[in-house]
Image (cartoon, rainbow, N blue to C red):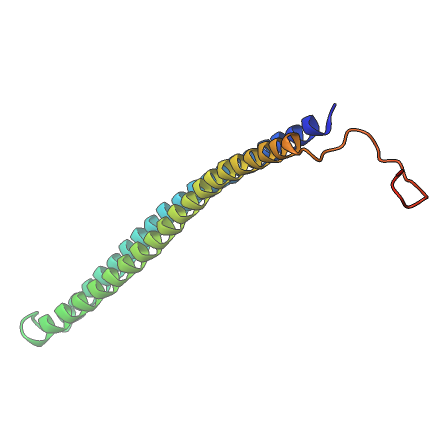
Length: 166
């Protein structure tokens, strides 16, 4: 095997290694993005569950308030009705805040998943570009070596006289 063949083989192996690394990076990014998508769905589901529980708690508290007024002989007109409405309004504000938080968390996770997928694609594309550059460099070096008119094919003998044999 000549040095030129070895140089081209090494360039090819380096290019193949670069592409394999890019494929592995892209696959890992896809898996991670998929897990993030699941986390996003879980975050939203948890927000819905928490908001539903809070809505039930508020409704239960309002029922307790209404029973308390009724048991005391107070009608639900006027101030008691205003108190019940304030309880409902505050409860709804809490439920809305829980849902906004869940949507924000879910959205953030989805954005990170998209960034991860993009990073994987960029790694794959970069590996192809690097492989192409490696192969082009190997071919260029091969051409430069083969076109070099000063390239020697036999070793130069040392002339101890210092006159180069003249």
